[in-house]
Image (cartoon, rainbow, N blue to C red; front, top):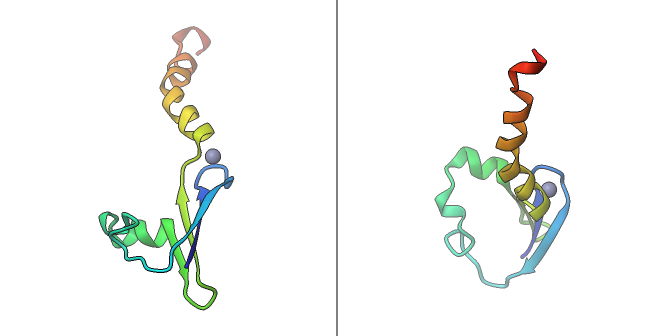
Amino acid sequence: MRFVYICAECENYIGELELANWDESMLGFDTLDSEEKKELVQIDFADQLGTVKAICDDCYKKKTASPFFYHQADDPGIH
Ligand SMILES: [Zn+2]
């Protein structure tokens, strides 16, 4: 099975790995509830392709920086 990691935010390709033997706990999927799993992990057994949504470095940085920007946008001076 080939697993392709795609950014959930910007859909950038992050990376991929090829695993002959795998299970859900090995990939950390067992920590997701069924809704999250449906959203984040798509496995196509016919094509032996798994698509996994993760977050790329850029979006991670944007996310961690965003409280700062929200704070600025909330500046009472612009209302
Ligand atoms: Zn991204």
